[in-house]
Length: 281
Image (cartoon, rainbow, N blue to C red; front, side, top):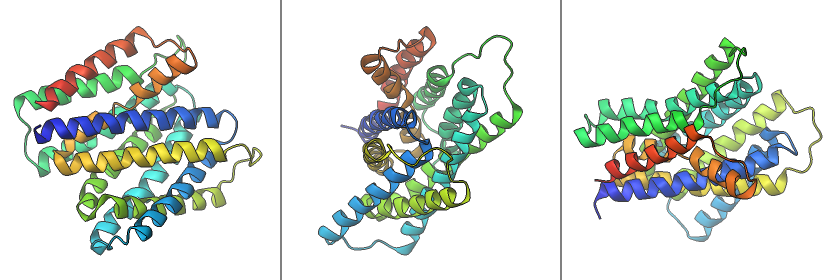
């Protein structure tokens, strides 16, 4: 199996796991503030990762790897808080689509500068992947409703933050994925705690631990697969394939909650399969 095929395969597993995490987190956010669901998942997964690293007596990687991971974990958590704020302002479809495309586009552009231009076939696959992300995540707004400019700006900021996190994780992956993830989770948990201290939710603080733990665990597993994908192939390939994770959330919602995907989303998922095939060659 070629490195490109292996990276695309690991990216698909990461996307599926991230999609499951978002689905569980979305269920939890119906019962408790979303930020509490995320924070509890970060804290639980941090404790588990620390126990694994200590139990396996893994040697600490170089400090620069840990710094890259911590920066990615911290700013990625803040980007998540910004994303939630953007969604709360209305026009979720366009805001989520903009965030999703930028999450993939930022590392794609960086990889083209850092790693050089991809092959023509891979370039077509990347373009199809970006279009697929837009189709999957974009839900047309109701007629007559306007998208707040501030929501789009915050969505763009969140997408840039997520994309930057993927780049930082790529650089951190050279130090070993378990310690990398532990450092990222520690910084992410700190960011969540600071956010809760500054802007505590007004809703009751209960009913979030179980979904938070499950969502955080799935998110951590997805991150580990993404880190593995970046070690085997180009950053842009791993980033675009992993960014197809909303498809997993949509499919779970269809099977579990019987929420039918739109024709646009079905077309996006079909296009995503074509993109993955091209990126695997």
